[in-house]
Length: 570
Image 1 (cartoon, helix red, strand yellow):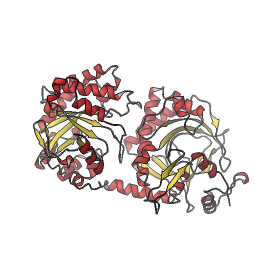
Image 2 (cartoon, helix red, strand yellow; image 1 turned 60 degrees about the vertical axis):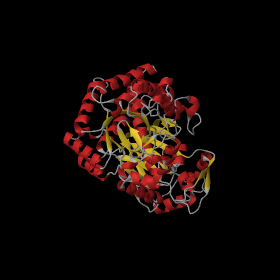
Image 3 (cartoon, helix red, strand yellow; image 1 turned 45 degrees about the horizontal axis):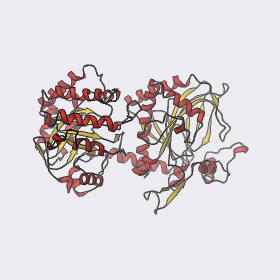
Image 4 (cartoon, helix red, strand yellow; image 1 turned 90 degrees about the vertical axis):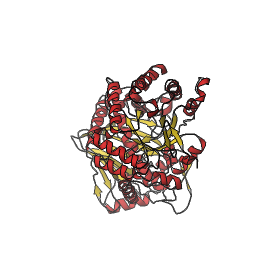
């Protein structure tokens, strides 16, 4: 098997081409040590994440010794994702010295997603400026550590401030060629395509082949005799895809988040076995599945830091919407109305940047006026930054929920997302709201900064979920796709007389006017479902439509009396 072919990494002999690159983002010091004690690198490279600068040098030394005792090679990732570019060189120089003191075999310079170096690279006006940023730092580092013990991590397709590079191939190919020319004995370049959310990595669909070619065939023909840096690729590889990439390329294959719960990842890849999920994630997926089968909402709670950041971002959206005139909402099943200020944004899928042209948003099922207001919001740097953070939180919840419901990775990548921000106020000084309804899409992910959302369960229970997490709800499209396995979430919004609140909701939907395969996990046999969003929304409103039996149950269990004009099949 090509994946288990030995390879030289500088002066180190690796026994296989698998790189273990755990995330360990939520681990404490004792958890980190325990993790590495269970790790079985089997003579491979281990990239220790930069979350452990907080640990004492003595703990770093123990981590290195544990990896060495297990016949692994330990490189430590250095970077400063939360700091400023001023003084970065000196800070990195100190991190290199600390890594050497702890006994690490080498270091990985982090210029990947969210790092200061990524911001610097994407902010350069020309490739030459970006090249100077990296090569100047590497020249400083090789004074302390040989180049063959240094690697660099890149994320060429990652967004920065909500925007992807218009031509990443040109910039990063130039960087690779400069690195090989200036540092021919550098250990490796590590290219990451996936986005890491709370529970899952989300694979990118862009190819690394141009970067592989730049490394293999530099412009200087006379330089082809040198081995040059190795190429490490990372993209949420399953066992099957890892073997396929290893057979097609000379890459070292990096396994990231999956290695957190699978310290025996080398053995699993050898047998092409499935990875297991962390116990907490497995429990969460099971809870989501059982919750959606009953038509209830599921709340993905935030920690204290996330909560503070979310609320700050919501305040920014509130300030932006305050400048616009309100419009009256549509009448719901109970004739409620509310004043609201609103705009929306869209993207071609999770992990994709927000669309920023009128032609692009005109393709979506949404009022164009509010869409154009959203485009103007993207021109405000503060608003865009806050919106991008909220988008990340919503996207993370959508990925976790989709996985729980059997929506496969390929289909998740094909789904579209529309994000609407709404500022609610009472109508004419009177209480109001949005009438009882299920959303017409596949899934809805909601963040709000105030009370008012009410959920009507099929057992007659009424509940207000609160606003301390991302609220996930199933839509009528999910109900149809799952052949009734997952019930839609019936909900309304009430606004008190003096209440003002802001919400952002992500509407997640299948691609329109195509056949969608059903999951065998929720349907007894393989079948497909033709997705026509306009037909679904029209049918949802019909007294004798597909949702009529569900309305019957909700009305009966909650003892509701709806206005005659909108009464639904009672």
